[in-house]
Image 1: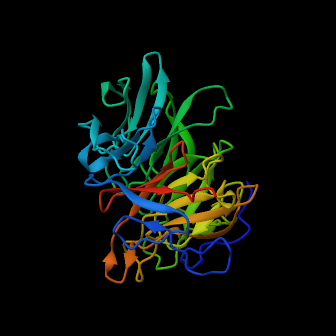
Image 2 (image 1 turned 180 degrees about the vertical axis):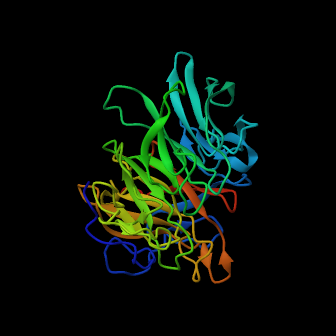
Image 3 (image 1 turned 90 degrees about the vertical axis):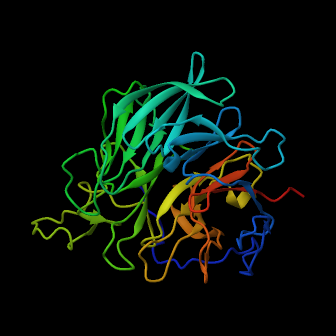
Length: 388
């Protein structure tokens, strides 16, 4: 695995700068009523409001925005039939679910099915033709419950072996411990019928979101453990390879031994390849990275943004000086290494307190970027600069 050319864990959050590189403050068009900053030429507005802790957001095959609302136990759609950039209202697609955090669409003989990652199970149901209701609910496989981390996220596994499978992230039950249930603190792989659940990647405290990169690699945001101070350990972005161990609870970041937790004496360093895999990118501790998305080609974004990685920093809960609360832009080289990063959207963290917490983000086919905010119940909509 290639490694980043710079250590980003110490990068101080910056204000957005202009594409000229001169460093002046750049203000995009903001119609949210919040003091949000974004690069000049971009526009942001409120797409939807009054939602219940919206987390994962995806675009249905017909172009409709859909979200998971875990605290409400439902998957909802947010149609914009008149294409005015504001949702017409919320439509319940599936309800009575147990804290659904993520979902995926899959083509079936009758249209599309919906895989849902509930906290206690992977489930599957059938969507009607206009994506307004899911029926024929069935559990494919149970998942472990309880403990500290309840979120479950999904992505389709790389198909190099010719078998369609799903990846399911299952966070640890604790902050630092040796799990009794080996499924905790891992990403599991499972067939589409729910059979043959097995480890894909392990040693992951809480890989909250998964995203396939343009070349098909699986990227994951991962929380670091708490109670090692303001600066340790780093939060992480990892590229997941099947069969690899990413170190938790014994190691963190670039294969640093957690001697506060693990006081054993070793003849050989336990935190080294090939036994443990280092992080791909170290992030500031406690910034709480969640959703991630790659800026696609042919989406109308400025050329310098194409292929960049955008990450939602949910924000710290126990930092002496709060950190995070932003959408961060990572410039990647041809090998996927981050060469620089800066705030893309900021302003949720103010002297008066926290005004919002970005959770997930996704691109529509027209290049529109949608962002969920599980603190305010809002969905933001960002459009790129218009071509001159």
